[in-house]
Image 1 (cartoon, protein in one colour):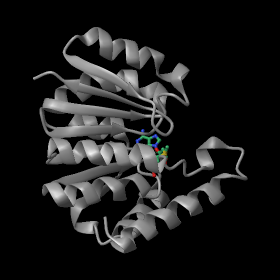
Image 2: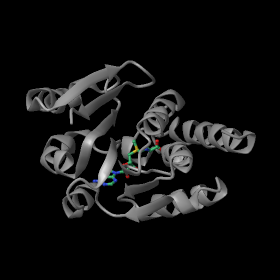
Image 3: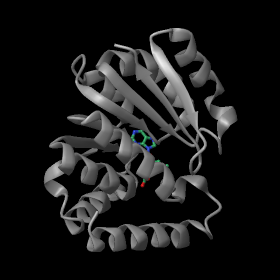
Length: 195
Ligand SMILES: C[S@@+](CC[C@H](N)C(=O)[O-])C[C@H]1O[C@@H](n2cnc3c(N)ncnc32)[C@H](O)[C@@H]1O
């Protein structure tokens, strides 16, 4: 990653922290991923040589920049979905600032609807970083849109472990996925389709 991008990510992360710190209402916070968690997902994108990545929960585009940078290396493309129109617009501007606008489509919409409308086997990686209670409902569509050896990565798997218990159990019960919890940042749960 070049120096300018490293600096932009550092600035965005610091601004996100400063923005969130005084806000009591969780929904008003930007809630960026930790750099450690974003770096892990970016690493997995590179290792997998991902072509198509879907992120649900863009916020201001902080993690999207990490993923789009990895996808520049693999020749792939990111679709990132944000339900808040202002945040989607900010994310587009931040991707332009990062020189990565050509690697990412920011969709203003509902992640569940985008998942339901996506063709079968259309994403190599799906990153979930939105409203955790919805993930259980996403599962049938998630497994449908994943390619063979596709990966689901879920942030906050340690910080909000109790909210992800049902999802974790569902994925482990599925039997077709190798599931691993990474104690990195706020915790990243990964599930890889075994073929
Ligand atoms: C934890 S933040 C995402 C942080 C972002 N991944 C980052 O690291 O910068 C969650 C975001 O998901 C958005 N969101 C909530 N429900 C959503 C949904 N159903 N579809 C798309 N976005 C949603 C919220 O508006 C919020 O901006």
